[in-house]
Length: 324
Image (cartoon, helix red, strand yellow):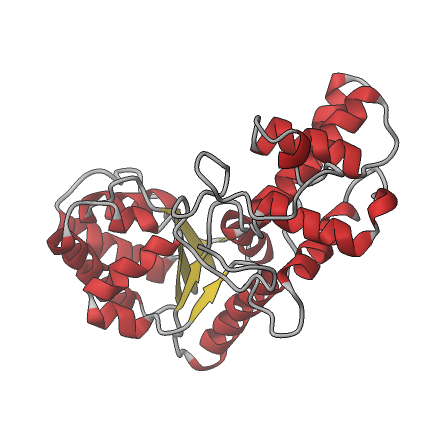
């Protein structure tokens, strides 16, 4: 297989949605909020939290595909407005980002109040039915609590004046923004966490295996569990990813690349062992590699290990051992 064919296969896989239960719940919530708004004019808001690679941007792409822009004789209609919040966001930069997505040719011009008025006018003219703010943690990353409150207060006012359902998508620290502003917190009372380990029925290693096999069905090569069996492979996947969706996808993508480059016709533990070392932890060899037969079946959360306690600041029910 030549380089272009390998690149195309990897790109197709990278564009696949991540079909795990919280992602499906989030998709259903977005659809329900838009349907409710269209039927009744009632605007419900949603907060989607997840670490990098858990599907927030994939959700935005799905929404954009399901509710595309279209043209009428007198205007462009934008059913869903998706805005990536700029780093160290200010009120002025937020307003400019919204105006740019709405097609304003002078998005950076004017005072904050003038920009805000244009955002509201264009949202109505373009018949916007939902606004999604991706990378919304950048609002929190700007300045101190006073700044957070001011930006949050501006957003609260904007949400009220546009009157459409709004979705904030961001890293877990985004919650701190809502802690600062009580009125904004009340508007985003529903929160969905894009993370494994929330099921009351399945252990997290079973969820890891389910996601692995579901994503694997999108690959041009079959998966196999080798001599360890599927249940044990699920446990190894948990330890290799720490139950994080992005790492399972990275393991599969890297394994696919290695397989295509070396003309191996299936993906199993030996390829996953190599992918773990290449993509997740270069020191993860021998008994420190979850796919090695000598692995000790423990979280790789000690000092200088990839999932060292405190590195990510999140916790979840593992069903295997305590999370630091």
